[in-house]
Structures are given as structure tokens and as C-alpha cells.
Amino acid sequence: MAKINSNFKNLSKNYLFSEIDKRVKLYLAAHPRAKIFNLGVGNTTEPIVHAVIKGLKRKVGELGRRETYTGYGNFQGDMILREALSKWYRKRGLKISPSEIFISDGAKSDCANISSIFAPDSRVAICDPVYPVYRDANLLAGKKLIYLAAKEENGFFPSLPEEKADLIFLCSPNNPTGAAAKASQLREFVDYAIKNKAIIIFDAAYSEYIQEKEFPKSIYQIEGSRKCAIEIQSLSKSAGFTGIRLGWTIVPNGLRTEDALGEGEINRLWRRRQSTMFNGASNIAQEGGLAVFSEAGQKETQKQIKYYLENANLIKEELERLKLKVFGGVNAPYLWVKCPGGLSSWEFFDKLLKETQVICTPGAGFGICGEGYVRFSAFAKREEIKKGVESIKKNLYL
Image 1 (cartoon, rainbow, N blue to C red):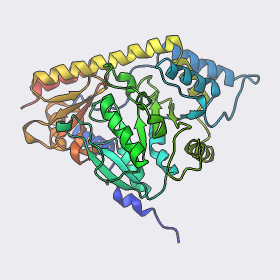
Image 2 (image 1 turned 135 degrees about the vertical axis):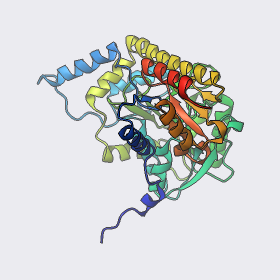
Image 3 (image 1 turned 180 degrees about the vertical axis):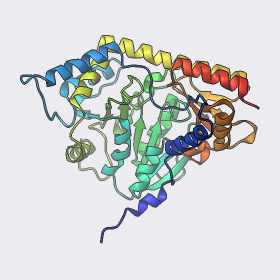
Image 4 (image 1 turned 45 degrees about the vertical axis):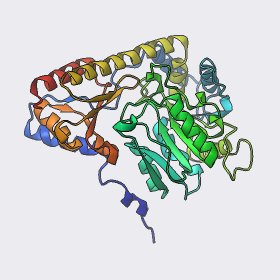
């Protein structure tokens, strides 16, 4: 007799963003003429830059000609793209072999799937608040979770696990808090992982937003990390690939576990997993990704990142003028705002929606430690941000 996966009962009843949509629809049903300002959106809004569009069009054109048509590609990713990524890391002083790079359809799926190559009884440490995929994917796999509190008093970066963890998920800059990890903080986790034979899963999807040099953009800037860390990256937020879908995961050949058979074993296991369950990223998307790492692509995408950071600064300044306590938004596109007057996350969400028609994201949806905060996003269009913060200034009753 077929049975469902009982681990689904461990998930929250509604996905966070589904609940937000539900509340907004109910509000609009009662106020059909209301103009909503979505400052909680985690989706990019600026168009793909010119250099990347050229790359995408070039590949589309090739697919329309018999002599240049290609079907399935290398499931690990086009070698030309992997070599371009390897060169991109070398310019940052990091030696990453193309054989250690696995091109994917974005960071989210790899974040969800990477722990599948580790034992089912692994103890997995994740930050709280946390991007839901780390929590939900490991709950569905039946793994034991260890929550690491990321609170205001520790700068929203957690302390080391008090109990032994086998896998540790870290995200810097963090989604949702916008906090970036210092080298000294990452050093502690690398030392812990080496001592306890643990593996760090480092989500660097927002690392291109880091502006201050004291915050590393890659875990591999920390000495010894190649022995204990997997890094997951994405072009979704750094180049607007949220709909195109392209990312990559780095699995160093020197990565080891206590029971690994030898050098490169974990890299081999991930290659085996991907070849079984993944047919490779779209060849069109990969051509666009290659264009991102061209000289023109880097210049244009960095300009777009600057635009979003200017959005973040605009939100930050206006909310702080209202005496709201605001974190993040300097090295990340997200701002973490403390709810005023002791309101809960959902109470403040509803208050903003009803009084100002502004949508944010309730922190409680990211975990217990997210309660009492909301997330604002810099990815909205500039004109919508200006109108939204103006509505907050005029209509929010504090």
C-alpha cells in the first residue's frame, strides 16, 4: 500500500509567501481601489542587462540552425562556463578548479538537495531566522535540526552549535536579516567543522552585494575551508536570473568526511547524484551566464547591483527617520526592521498593509527568532519604493 512521506507533517501548514498572497488578496477584495506597494518582494525587477541579452539571443539563434543546434549538454555544466567561473575566482585570489564547479538551475534546488549525499541521520545546524528551504528540505529528509539563534544581541550571526552538528548551513549576507559574516566569525565555524569533521554548506547567493572588505564574499577566503565547506552560488540576484535560472555549487576535491573513501569522494558523490537526477542547466541560460562574466557583463551587472543597494539605502533612511530600528541594507538587498510597540511580525504586517498599503515579509515566517521583525526588500522598482515609503511616512500611525 502506498503511503505519503510522514515528514510533510513537520512543515508549517502554509508556505510563508502563500500566506502573504492570501492576506493581500483578502485586503484587495475589501478595498478594490487600493494601490499596493510591494516592498517585500524577493524577486528582481530590473531588466536583464544588454550584454547578457546578447548572449541569450546568440544561443537562441544557434538552436535555430542545424549546424549549430545542441541538445543535452554536460550535466556538470558547459566547460567553457566552468572555466570562466574558475578564472573569475582566480581574479579574487581563489583557486577553484573547473572540476569542482557544478552548474545548476539556481541556488535553491542545490540548497535543498545537497544534504542528500550525506547520511539520513545527520544532525543539521541552521540559523534561526532562516531561508525556509534549508529547514524544510532537511525536515522532509527526516534529518535532525539544530537551531542556531541569530538575534540582535549577536548581530544576527549565530554562535557555534552547543551540540555536535554534522552539517552546518550558513548564508552570508543572510536572508532575511541582511547581516554579513566577518572573516573572524567564519573562521570560528571553519575551525569547528574541521575539529568535529562537519561540513559547512555556505550559501553565497547575495555575496555580490557585499561592499565592505571586512566581510568575505566566499567561504574559501578562510584558510582551511576547502577541507570542510561546500559553496552554493547563484546569478538570480546578482544578474537578474530569477526567471532564467542559473547557479553553481563548488565541491572541493579536498573535501572529506570521516567515512569518505578518499580524495574527491564527496565531489564524486555529488557528480553521481546530479547525473542521476539532473540533466543539466539550460544551454541558453548557460550562454547568458557566460555573458555575465564577460568584461561588459560584469560592468553592467555591478551597476545594477549598485541600483538595488541605492534602493536599500532609500528605504533604510526613511524608516530610520520614523525612529524604526533598521538592520541590514548595507551589504545586502534586505533590511530587517524591528516591529514597533511590541507588535508581532504578522500584526505589523497587517498594520502596514491596512494603513499604508505596503507589503513587507513577516519575520516569524523565517523562524522563532524572526518574531518581532519584518523584512523589507530593495528589489522593488525605484518608483514603487519611493511611493511606498512616502505612504508609510504619511499614513503609518506609531
